[in-house]
Amino acid sequence: MHDENRKPGRVVRAARELTDRDLEAIACYADLADSLCDIFDEELAKLEEGQVDALPDIFERKQKIVQAMEIKMPILEGLIDREAEPIDQLKIKLSAMAKKASDVSVRIERIAAATSAVMREINKVQEKHSLSGMYSPDGRKRGAASGPSKRIDESF
Image (tube, rainbow, N blue to C red; front, side, top):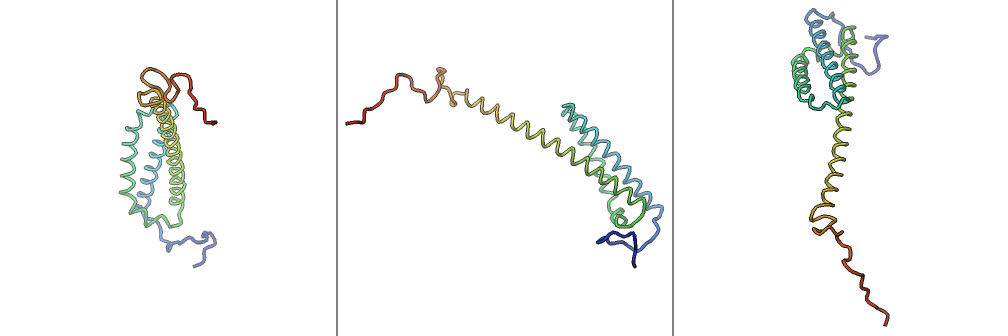
């Protein structure tokens, strides 16, 4: 079968009309993808505002949607490689969802890296100023000579 609109390397199943059940599953999955995109947008906004305390609630909502998507996935797996307008639209939504998920992930990784850097600096400062650090209990810098330096005359 030769199809002028077929993309190279893409396996296309024999054309069969999508059933009402198929269309319903695609629409349901698209709605879930839209909901997840909305949550990703909310999550990015909260991260930009520094409201990290809102993240646990957002995470729970994302988990519920992902679980619902996993339940619907077996139905879609049989449809996703078909060429049909509803499936093409779903693929566009899934690509947008993946982009937003990546944006959230990058933002969280940056926050984690910045937080780790701050913690390293705090630990360095604490170590320098602790009893085992740079200064002795009497406030003098460790390793510094307490009196005038005494040199041994090695030239004999």
